[in-house]
Length: 518
Image (cartoon, rainbow, N blue to C red; front, side):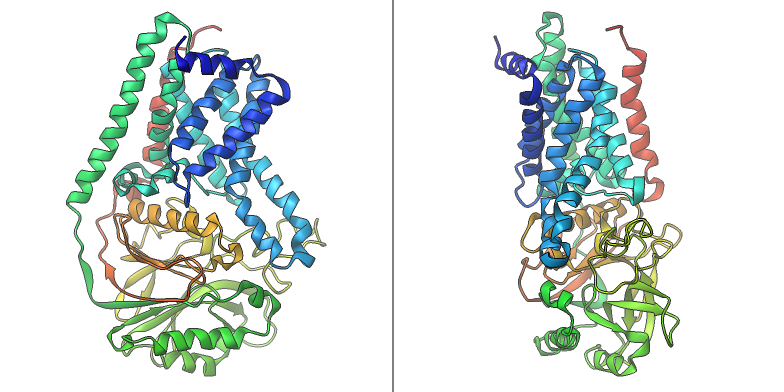
């Protein structure tokens, strides 16, 4: 009996808590495929096991149940690093850690569970049904990224951040499309587990097809990269400051001046400032109401290069005088005279981090960031002007994780800047995975991305997703680099979710047309 058949038979024989426990372990194992571990085959092994478990289920309800347990393990292992943010002030927020981490995993698990329930047909390991499963998976990822503000973390396409060549196809169909092909490639070998002799040849052909598809994606990506240029915008030299400020100190309060002065010192005292035209500080680096503090703006102006600008994270409030009624997590552009030339407010806020959902129902819950007032949300992505540089599209913190939602489609910028404070998550997989998301946005949009992160990872990513330079997580760093040029708008930038949506429709048609009675 071939190994795949024996393994499938063993998995199918599992019952009760053993089946559910094995599903959880398989799901957790798949998380090893993401940054910073990068064991890509772990996702393939895990998905094959998931598909066998689902199709071995005696009922559709059990298929949903098993897929949910797999997904719970997947999301719990992939998002455990969030717990660090609650441990920073364990006295106030430690109690929230178990319900938030487990509750998030339980909720996110509903989406793959629905895909498992829909695809279920007992014992069906035909290639066309496995391909349809890929389409359902992408629908589940899309829903996860949009429902209830969305959480587009660790999309399956992100396992390919180890291969710039594999990332290139996202310029055509985005991370959703690459995710679809990835599920197809990884899961088609599951058809080899069928004991039906009539399907054996079909299963072998499907597995060969998976290998060819993988090779084709890599080869076309490598071809695209072979024509890539290393051109940079003339007359623009960036300085990215990573001060590695303690998040514990930020939460305690009383250190704002000290942290601000640290950014000033790193900017001023690092050699080469005379060659720099623009300085970028991370999220909350200038933790003051800058429009109300001309003295602070003048201190910033002292390190702004002539005819250039400094971009920094800050807090903005309304009205500009007296007690404020609204606050925004913002990026502002300050020139060498200390004038605020432009600003962009965060549109995609973090639940519990920047606001408390349904606050009226949960008055006993506080947001993690200091202050009792919730942040307000901007209407969406913006493009702003920067003295001495091309127009830029800012994103703040985890806004960068959402495909086709980081660029003002009516006013396309020439570069993207992502400022963030990943100090919340310490030395964990979170900051690495956040950096991966930024790389995929650059390829999807065909726009270079500059990232300033308080504790890391900061860096410059070109329009092909290649890392030109980056800092080390947890270090104090000052990066001087050029600004890569943007490409023409990619197919995904122009049409967005329409392209992967059509791909999903194509792969679901066989399941609908060739549906046979159980």
